[in-house]
Image 1 (cartoon, rainbow, N blue to C red):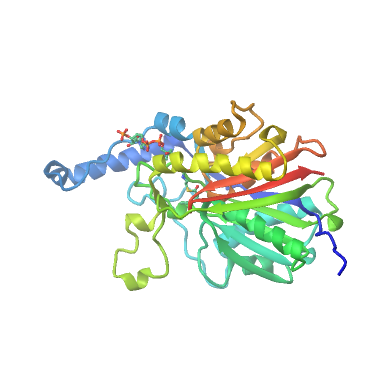
Image 2: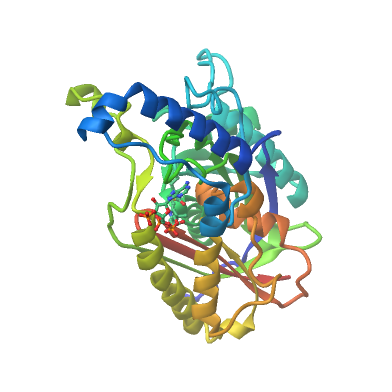
Length: 378
Ligand code: CO8
């Protein structure tokens, strides 16, 4: 049998939907502190008796220093800052209306299609990859497929912080094997409904966004510039240090369906200390496997959970501090947008590389999971 080389695969377009509304640290802290004062007043007797823990105030200075986050975009501010509610308000949509995640995913997808010079008719696979899907079925990906007039197949996949990169890995594998010829990968990260805005440790972390990427074979690409995928690499290690226990079993559990553990919760310090070295090692080993050194990489588009974590990872990878544009930061204004962080960074900072320059997209976090793609500007 003659050996045929696998096709070259490229990212030919990317897109983003950024919510029109934003909440600053100042606003979030003001509302949390008002909520905490009222909670302490309402539970003064139990706090004095030691049966309930007092709530301590949140601080803007802490948030910015500990995380690098100054503000976050949100689908809606409605309800989040209301001290009687402390969660966003999303009116339930009818079954014949477009769902929320499909809506934001479609906006990002349209921009990605346009950048790639493609229409829905050119695409034959849709992957929705996110930390959450708002329902198990029908898949959000199939709803997006239908709305954009795409043939072929579509499916949803979860993967927490690495959903987006793992989704791109699946797109790459499908294109290499020939099971698809043009893939739309979408990350509708609508995460604020899962944030515990009553939890001082995590109320400031997350924001909403949707990102999308078009991946295809180089020989079908008509975009003026594209990024060839040189290699993909993934790693997972089980940890409950970032966890959400909400799921379909709750109906049968006879427990409080909206208890604190059913929302996002984590041991942030442990995550920081355990994930950073794993991510740095993964990046070095992935590059080494291609005969590359970290200094060969012109841009790192990293997961956006914490600026100190990104600085630590980059310092460990390079053995020195990085220049400003080597590993762009978007979490100051986007917050942690779950798995979409590295794709936001790629989308906003993909320009400025010369033909032949190498870059790396890398996610790390819940699971634990690390996912990377080494790309080359063409
Ligand atoms: N204001 C003031 N003080 C505070 C606050 C606050 N808001 N929060 C905590 N403190 C206090 C603590 O109580 C503690 O006080 P003490 O010293 O008296 O005990 C002190 O500040 C220090 O606390 P920490 O040690 O926890 O602070 P850190 O410096 O570690 O910062 C972070 C906390 C920012 C959470 C940091 O640990 C971090 O970012 N870690 C990495 C976490 C991470 O990467 N997580 C991944 C998230 S998951 C993901 O990215 C996507 C998948 C899930 C999507 C879910 C969407 C809902």
